Image (cartoon, rainbow, N blue to C red):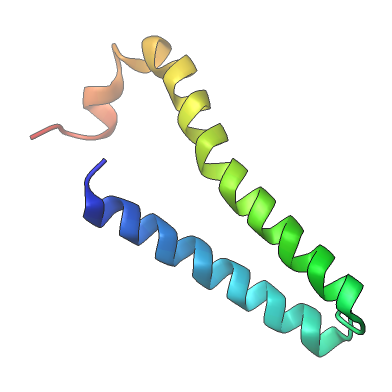
Length: 76
């Protein structure tokens, strides 16, 4: 993965977390310090796990779709 690709993924995940945290604050779910910490901790945890899980899942199914991948997306 290039630095640009990593940056694009990071910005996308940050915008997702920002939108959900704004909605949670508007709904009143962040009333105290403990609730704010729990919300931010869980966002960080899951936003860090999701790309790693997707990458490892992609590696595990790559051998099954290798015969058909050139029909889905043309490689340069």
